[in-house]
Amino acid sequence: MLDFPRWKTIGISIILLLGIIFSIPSFLPSKTFDSLPTIAQIKVNLGLDLAGGSHLLLEADVADLQKTQLANMEKTVRAAMRGERGPDDDIAIGELSTAGGKISFLVRDQSKLDAARDRLFNETGGAGIATGQRDWRIDIIDTTRIVMTPTQAGQAQAIKNAMDTARDIIDKRVNALGTREPTIIRQGDDRIVVQVPGLQDPQQLKDLIGKTARLEFRMVDPNADPAEVAAGRAPVGSEIVPYAEGANGSAPYEVLRRQVMISGEQLLDAKQGYDGQSGQPVVNIRFDSGGSSTFAKVTAQNVGKRFAMVLDGRVLSAPSINEPILGGSAQISGSFSVATANNLAISLRSGALPVKMTVVEERTVTPELGADSIRKGVIAGIVATAAVLTLMVLVYGRFGIYANVALFFNIFLIIAIMAAFNATLTLPGIAGFVLTIGAAVDANVLINERIREELKRGRRVFQAVELGYSEASRAIFDANVTNVIAASLMFWFGSGPIKGFAVVLTIGIITSVFTAVTVTRLFAARWLHKTRPASINI
Image 1 (tube, rainbow, N blue to C red):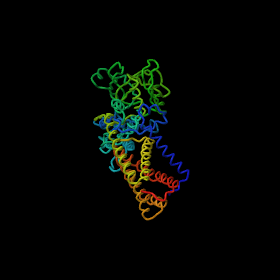
Image 2 (tube, helix red, strand yellow):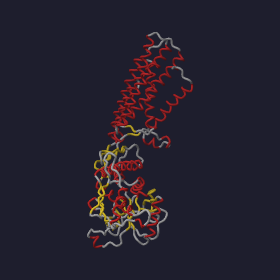
Image 3 (cartoon, one colour):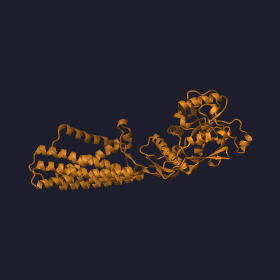
Image 4 (spheres, one colour):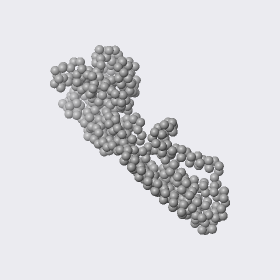
């Protein structure tokens, strides 16, 4: 136990040195840290309660989701009625109606009614294993009309799927801002909590998250009767869509075909750029292979006609198609600033939110509150450390000094590991840190007390110290394994502050075992081999 080969001594020394080096950036002022090379910019991130930031509670617009669900099923029905083997396999249907939250249409050939129902049955699915229900109910009315009604279980499953997707998309958008360690969690069935430490401009966050970014390319209906449109009535298969605020439309609205030519789901990339002629900020988009082919085909068939770019139900622009647009690229222009164009590009890249989200609660935590918490936490840490250092020296002498030196190395290692893993320190994390400092010398107490017992039994110094470390190590490892299990369960089942406490506690347990057992044993072994004392006071 007291034999340390040269390679082991060098290895332990390197670990301790790296702990000091990697912990230093976390103590530097922000300006000094920003001037460091990129490879050296590794530090412990501060949570919302310490660094300040923004807290938003978002609520899903369930009505909007149901509307989207109807629109998607309408596309599915039209596609299903088109045969896979060509026009001869098509099933002719009347105009689709989505009134009352249902899809209703007439099958013109009554002999194909069952075939149409079978096709629709294949396009719908189960609404969860536990319910035993399907997501859509298919009924035949008056022997020729099919009515599809979303079931309650299907709508509940759709909301769950949409919220899970929305959470992932919001995470992509927030991280694209360059922030670190945001907290994005579901709350209830239709809400999401977003906490972003260090972000002092909540409006920027709200603009980015609140944008659904549902992009559509749709044809303008040239046959709309202006008088009917002025009265709020659009032709069958079309709808009246208003222009976005600041968009340069000749009228406050456009009459667009309901059918979507290309959707944002076929986007491959979106980047902020500048218009080659006006120099105004724009968003350059690029479609995937399927979207490029469709875009080229549609524009080739509609030369001389107008199409509209629609974002979140608002027309951005409605230019004329002068020639087929090949290459799969397009440009979205509008009254953009560089910031708004960049935010739109981020939103489009991350994907459209499957449901519109509304901010129902907003809180801002100021850095001053976090600074006060840090100051009090540091005071608590200093008091705890001073008390532990004093007690260990008074009770155990030289071996107490070894424990104190190991304690300092333990503090550096905790900070270094948290920085290396880009972990976030929260107020509960500071509590875990202070607790770790107080408990870090527990292992040394066990070891030193065991050495005392062996000396009282008449053991020689070397033998007493060796037995003290070997016998106490078993109890130390057993006790700390149970602590790690408890901390792991807190991390697994907890959220937010509980996770922050569990992370710091787990790291502290691991590093304290290393420093309290291995590092102090190295100090004791080197001193014993060098001085060969006949007796020791402990």
